[in-house]
Length: 115
Image (cartoon, rainbow, N blue to C red; front, side, top):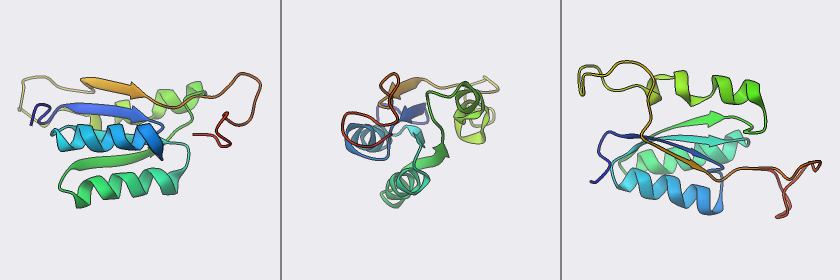
């Protein structure tokens, strides 16, 4: 478990490469913040990770929105070090993988849906 107890924030996790990345990081021991605009998809990925024995929590956020980014996983218990484990306190994350985005001036992505 290369990433045991490290925190990874993965955006665009509702499908495709974002989902696969979140699951792989969890298999390596990371605690994963599953971030997607589609709550149902993100929650399913988080539930799949937990069912497989990992640790994950779902978050709804649009990475194109400053307000969503400011309130998403950085200030939540999922992104905090376990108390006393490494001597650090407060929000932290060791990995961030961004698989979400939006084409400028468009309401969807080239694949036919927003992530």
